[in-house]
Image (tube, rainbow, N blue to C red; front, side):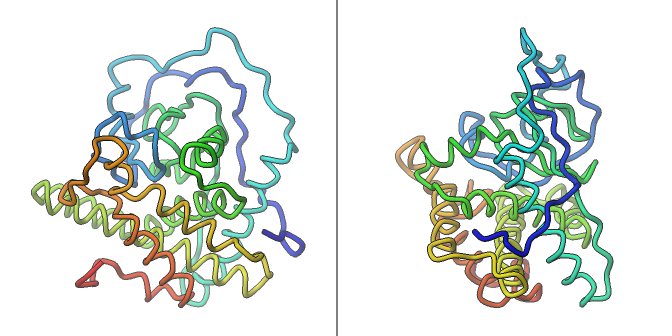
Length: 287
């Protein structure tokens, strides 16, 4: 990725080295539903915080036995995060203006191990997630090492895709899509609820593609191989990929994020069109 024409966002809250979650969860709901067994939660991002966070209501957040030293505020990792978040801000501000709406910028929280959120206690094992209760994206940067080594999806744009996907959930929240889906899921049976979750996640993938298309057109952020990095990451965290790794076979009715093919297809659709209208997964007959 190139950041020659990019600015760094000021909406990054650095809690790294804080040593623990800071107390009990304080309620709320999360976005990015994951119903694969809990052992898989650590394997991919976009997880609904309520799946894991609600379990923390009964006990205090884990606390580190010793406070870790926080990295310097302007280390390379945090600078990269601020550049990517800045790119999402500038891009979505423009897209929202074009559609007669106002974009409210989210905060991105860097943490180590566990941290307190409006959705409960966020833990590194969950992977990155978005909490609509405080409109914040949470990420323990150790996940990027996992993405590189375990999922074989290295590269800076693979990392940017992770952020863009979670910011996509923020866009859904601002547009009122998330609330409608949550209400519909509560009325639906398990199979239909899973289907709605898949459509929500695939739309976030598509929105990540819309961001990439528009940011590159405006400021030339992409380099050769970047899109392929994102597609490898999307493939690595497809429900079918993860289930086959965990149990040797896939159960499509239990998918909550979409298959590898679906995730790459919808990212490509957003990337090729650059338009919000291209991401209406809820009207699509086939995913």
